Amino acid sequence: MPVSHAVVPTTSGSRYINRLCKHWQHKLNVAHDEHQGRVEFDTGVCRLRAEPDALHLSLEAVDAEARERLEHVVAVHLVRMASREDVDVAWRRDDA
Image 1 (cartoon, rainbow, N blue to C red):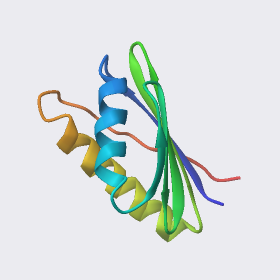
Image 2: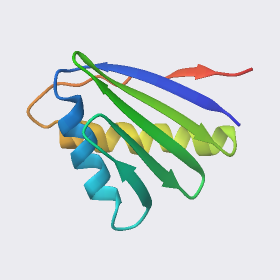
Image 3: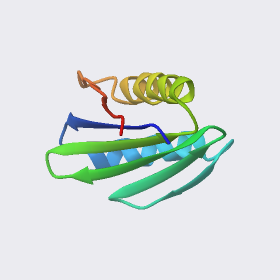
Image 4: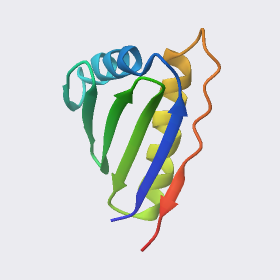
């Protein structure tokens, strides 16, 4: 499975996890608490983990094309949820 990771510098990681998971829970299988979240898309899974100074994102997708779409979807939604903060989502792909 193609995998990607991103570390987004922010002190609002817990808030973004809460907002993203609540947004997606109406259509997707979602589990979350204050410090972590898991979102199951049709073509992959996104895991989110909040640290005091960063939000860690991890994606596993069924194929490279799905990974690219999920990277885009997660990044766009995060930027929208962080409207008051300039966030930069730079994905690092782990192609083993």
